[in-house]
Amino acid sequence: MPTLRQSSAKYLSELTRRGASVHTLRNYAADLEQLAAYFDRTPIEVAALDLSLLREWLADLYDQQLAVPTIRRKISAVRALFKFLRQEGLLQANPAARLRIPKAPQKLPDVMTAEKTNNLLDAVTELPEKHRDIALLELLYGCGIRVSELVGIDLGDLSLHDGWLRVRGKGNKERQVPVPERARAALAQYLETRQARPDQTALFLNSRGQRLGDRQVRRLVKLYALLITGDSTVHPHSFRHAYATHLLSDGADLRAIQELLGHARLSTTQKYTQVSLKDLQAVYDRAHPKA
Image 1 (cartoon, rainbow, N blue to C red):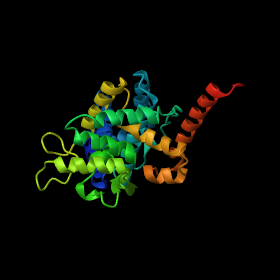
Image 2 (image 1 turned 135 degrees about the vertical axis):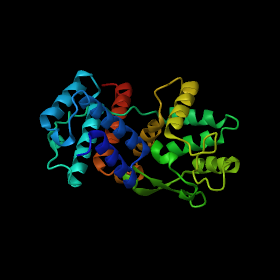
Image 3 (image 1 turned 90 degrees about the vertical axis):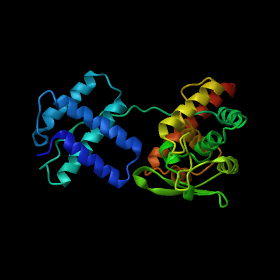
């Protein structure tokens, strides 16, 4: 019987084959390594892990006072691992399926106003020799894509003439999103200065001419936001939240926004209606004489 770490490595290889994102692979690898490290105290075979032992591991997570979303992700990773092992015929049952997942806190995303978003983009646009950074920021807001989708774009995915971009989302699912005029102009300028080897297909490159990584994008966004707006909490997903909320505020159909964002369920998109209603209530409270 393979060890817990060997089983995890096999499962991660399968996730890689299925086209899981780098972000997902990194998180699942860390979560499963933590599980293995916990049971290193008393070495045990995978087949011997039952519900009581997994509950003991879960109690340890609570003792560490981890955030609920973190605990939910770790349970999901472990459930998925055991499901895979059962499908492979290595386990008779999936004891992790009966682990109780804590309810996620209902927190609305913080959304930048249209004014703040445009002020940030306008300020970056005025910086000299920053064509790549301007283009990626315009694309994050103009298309509402995830950072993992941004860094995964290849030259062949972009059609500037037609104004469309092919995006590979979660589960390697593809979708087409329109590229607004401002982002198209920024991309055209960037492509004129992009220097790469003939075999390099990535759209956005780092200083070594290799594909830009998601961590580098996060650092860039945080740096520009801090320098220009003084807000260090802005991250790449902030532009995605702003994209959806601003579209909804301007009358876009919820189903269309779901398609543009690549959400599998409409309920995921509906959280932006709550954000818009919250903003509307704030306007009412400030303006109505009887509020």
